[in-house]
Amino acid sequence: MLDKTSIQSSHNHKNCMQHALQAAEKVCKNKGVRLTSIRKRILELICTSHKAMGAYGLLDLYKQEDPKAKPVTIYRALDFLMDVGLVHKIESLNAFIGCLQSEKQHQTAIFICDNCKNAYEIDASSVYENLFTLSQSLQFKPQKLTIELRGLCVNCRY
Amino acid sequence: MLDKTSIQSSHNHKNCMQHALQAAEKVCKNKGVRLTSIRKRILELICTSHKAMGAYGLLDLYKQEDPKAKPVTIYRALDFLMDVGLVHKIESLNAFIGCLQSEKQHQTAIFICDNCKNAYEIDASSVYENLFTLSQSLQFKPQKLTIELRGLCVNCRY
DNA sequence: AGTGATATGTTATATTATTACATCTATGGA
DNA sequence: TCCATAGATGTAATAATATAACATATCACT
Image (tube, rainbow over all chains, first blue to last red; front, side):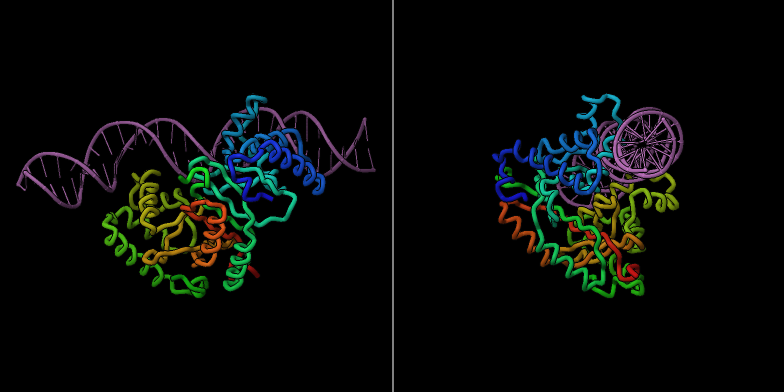
């Protein structure tokens, strides 16, 4: 689970990334789906930083290794990774981040710094509870929640 | 303020819309900005239903009245209307809805029915409080919140 | 090895949004 | 009233994001 320390610029990102990738293998195994080499590589590329990445940015990177890659190559990998819960789309940016807590069931909000572009997924269960209650009072049946906060992170706010 | 009754298919939409348009005039006057005829017409088109509308859908409608209209015509109007708070973008749909409570300061969540495509903006102040508290604990300075729930509305869930 | 399901390759195109620059219009001050 | 100018609109081109359709390849199981 992401905690307050991981939002610090100082956190050990190598560990952070390694953990995400190991979790990915585990999650795919459990679900009986295939983390093929393309999919794995796209996930790695996303996870190299906490910055949200656009599909075409990923394509540019991936093309360095496979010049014949096309947009659909990336979108297919992203669709898979999102289905499995290894990647999330940030709707307000049309961009993607790696999920650092893919093993656990999670109810998260995404905090996006408009200065450094880092995006952090933070547990927000109580916010979900709140929204579920509100849904109930409207007799609305929620299926997918999007909670995104744009602003300035602790490293960029001053 | 939108309340539980306005999510019913039965609500009187003519009133609903008229109210939104009158509020728009007021809001623009107060802010000293110009609700020109293009802008007003685009707002009217958005407000004719509670369904989220894409920019190109609006363009098609608007072209019936002004065949020379271009995408940028619509996007400029939408940008203005969003700045003033008369329209909101639904990020998860790349679509727009009219704001029915533009006079009041508001902290809302958007409930989107994936069946009938209606989208309702509902007061969610307590959710905002919750997220502000969470932000504080992360020393994150929030500037814009996006809260969207996709699911099934009371009219479509059975 | 054969079969069916899943994944990938390839081409084309759809959808959403912005840039750049020209022209027009509203508004306030001389 | 006329001018200056800021804001609004016109017009063309293009950027950025995403999907469709169909062919081929690969995996996993028998």
